[in-house]
Length: 389
Image (cartoon, rainbow, N blue to C red; front, side, top):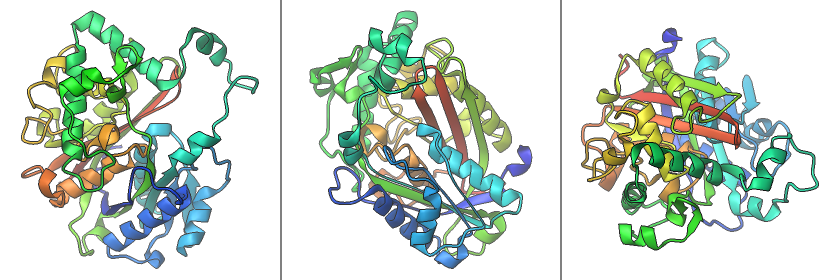
């Protein structure tokens, strides 16, 4: 695994308009983002020989990546559809690195787009349909999908460590503050802790503002070999470390720990040869406020149980000790399965983030969490840097 360090770089990054974007399909978002990312890299479709994507929600289309390639005029040497839920963008980049490192490709497009509002309208209830079996032991008791799973974990953390709703609210406020500096964010109205506590309870202790958005939009990155990257017009962002880990038993292990992420993080830190204290900016998968707090603990930014105090006092805001989700994250920019966490890390390391730019950013950390059903989880982490070594 260590031989993959700095073998590849992200050379192009782009995103589309996000939020409620009527009349634009998930495919169109994916294509728009892809075209912009390829142009950002200073390449053409003829230079791309790998395409990775994820089939849109509620769309049974097979070989979706081939359709993306066809629409872009690309004849890829390697292509596949990937789905590790919220960890999919991590999986795309990791797969691109492996494909390039073993000689299958030189430049791989990773793109993802969705028309989430359309998908929700098309969603049908699980009752009366074949299922995996675990639903029979969960749904009758109200354990339905991610909000309840993460809420239960958050309540356990509160019980063990005294974590408070005010601390969760500090995360929501910070993410919204950053989104207000991002022209391409779904939410631009500032919020206070008072606004947070005024939002309705959804799955106790989670309020509306603890939960990520429903969004349309797309994002894409182009990954190339380091040698190819050095000849392109923009400074490459090197992939220094990567890690992925999955759990087929308990996603949280003990409910206050996301155990697979800790494993993925250990791999990425080791490969990159860095520690949490070296990270300048963290783009952390924030499906819920609690997921930010617990990842900060499990990735070593603070000790277990100290995530609550760590996120208070502006520490995770711009200008703080560890700026987190400088684009606004899933909570306030847009929920596109985390692809925009990667594009934001690239923009930060290039110094392209404008008002929300982190001064002297050299190293960025990006995470992804996938949860398809409560007991099963996939996690991934990238460490990106301006310098190759």
